[in-house]
Length: 332
Ligand code: GCU
Image (cartoon, rainbow, N blue to C red; front, side, top):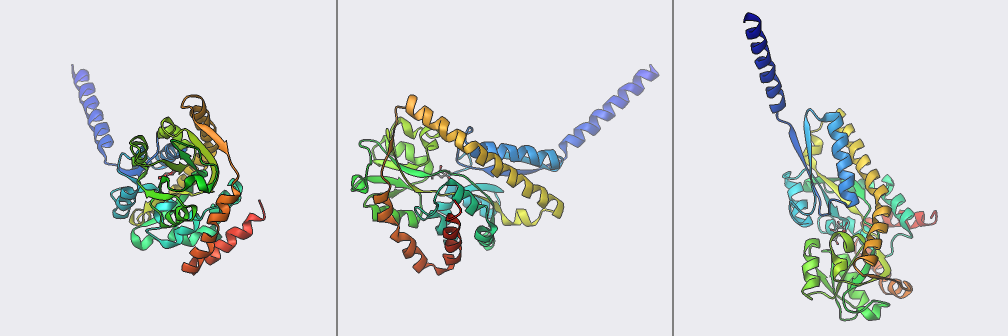
């Protein structure tokens, strides 16, 4: 009986200790974005979660919120400024309104190809200062994600040349540079949040939109817009930002682990990209009935390339970055 009592008390004590240990509150790290579960961005963040929790799991609990669960991208950036969200993804298009030098990556036909784009985004001589520039606004850039190449897609008729865009209402991102680009192409730019595009297409409020191929599959745009025309006007990166105070409060050791975690997230996201494009095209073509149209890009380039000089004249601060990017093109 005595032995039984001892065992009982010891078991109860052990139970109490273990329940206390599991109640030790962990700091929740909220990571938010506007893409679907299957999107490379979500896969990148799941790898980040796994890595951070494998190294610092006793202290941090990473929670990934996809699909605009914590609000539109614009809203998420504001919540990251205040620290209600720790980490989120903002399209570079949107960041131009928070820090004007981001307009550089919204310029149409800036990069020669995907390799030139990746090499430029990975070059600290091009991006390091810019990625720090917003710290007084409450956030910093910790890495970038691939968001492919943007082209036009429409509901009623295909786009073959800028003339076909005349008078059409095309949804664009909330970026002054992009709106100006659309003016040069003769279309009527309709800035909307990403989550509003499907309904706007369905209701006929817009005649089309522009994005990478994944929007057809993941956001259902291919259910409504059946013509995807490869004019390939922009490669707008997605920018991963984090609350500045959160980053500054990390110990040196933790900061190094988070840095590695962001690298892993980017690596996985980038590696998944091409696969996702192929899969999205396959679904769009075979299940959604989208037609992919190869077109001559020259008239589009001729119409919008003057925008480079226009933006450089208005904002000479980006000249150095611009020249480095252009010089790099020779290598690819
Ligand atoms: C892409 C990009 C998103 C962006 C969206 C948009 O999907 O990855 O970050 O929000 O385009 O057109 O708004």
